[in-house]
Length: 182
Image 1 (cartoon, rainbow, N blue to C red):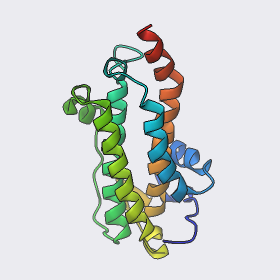
Image 2 (image 1 turned 90 degrees about the vertical axis):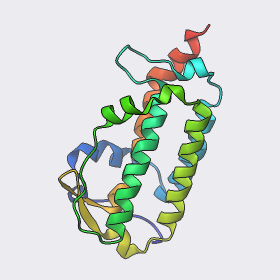
Image 3 (image 1 turned 60 degrees about the vertical axis):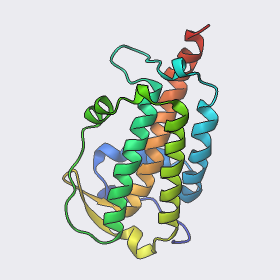
Image 4 (image 1 turned 135 degrees about the vertical axis):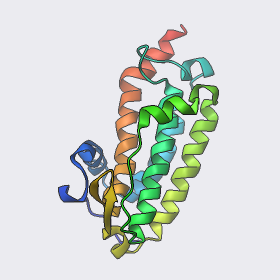
């Protein structure tokens, strides 16, 4: 692993992902942030009941379970892209429709404990894989969803995606889910 994984340039990812990259840049050490998030997610959600985990802030919004299931889906998709790009695979990769994935998964039938545990396992595998990447591998670029993307950008996007959804959980989900049962 390189001593420090520097932030990607704007040319290394599609504009859609700029929020994720910017959120990740707020963490001092991107590699350490990967591990910290693996602790932060369970410590934030451990107090919720199964009913609270199925809370939706609005009828067409995802439930908390669905948000965590989505985090797991994206952790898998981004890590697959990261693997291929870091191995210098130039084959373009298609995108995916997150709404379809969430709808098809049935995450509200999962326990929140299982969803969070799954995230921890996925993230640990990514931490190990990233820890063994050379600086050259981190700098490789490929194509995903029709846009250029670097392995470095994907590492930042892993962190930024979780940051994005943690902010949403803290702002509109958790205060309402906890008061919904009172």
